[in-house]
Image (cartoon, rainbow, N blue to C red):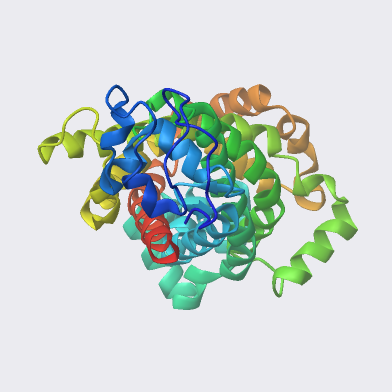
Length: 368
């Protein structure tokens, strides 16, 4: 909340000296020297934070605050939301990785790539040959990476949104949400990528790595540090449009749901921030659409992260270039190969986005 020592020098609108402001509650009682002409004289506490000028004044001495929260709390909410999202949906991510990986790698580890052509057959194969634990190989790497990455992601998103929206606005424009999301993902991908590489190596059938640290040390010893960031360009090329679509659809869906509940176009949607169903519907629809559109680049990313120097030296000449990797996959396996894993990818991101946004917004409300 604003400081109790708040004491502006003059009326924000007519620049006349205010009368007896000692704390934030007095803002609702202020009568300036020109009270007959100044609409600020009628300001009530309830309307204070809907008034852009008074909101700026009230927040003037509160550093690093957006929507009433310091950014450390945005980072905490984002970190927890990211871990909950990825751990809850990890089995679906394992299926997606195996469907998108090079068939040669799958055949070498599991005997027959045909077992991973659909979600039901993949589930049967994993449970039959590896048991339930096979669904969760690499989950610790995901948890280690998702927390810090999502902390950066949501903090960068909120800060970018705050800057781009400008003072006094409560309704987020889809373009602002898109740009903010794109900036956030560029920052977060660099944090997430090393653990994402480890996670996917552990998810492959027949993986000989004993765990996260064993996998990291073997990659560093045999291939150097480059594999941890080989797919960064692909990841950014995939996640920027993914995030643009995701955040735009999410914010627009919240506004649409607001209209469906009878709110006006300029409503601040504050009470919808408390609605779990709103975030489930908006987040889920945003995640599904964004996941489907960016699936070809996700196939390229999976190939780049799972192909290693020791076993796939001949293929690495294609792996370092996004376009060459796309054309190589299409030429060798057909264009339909670029749609591999689209089912589990949409299955993952629809509930995952809903879980993530619901957890994030709920934690924001709890921490406020």
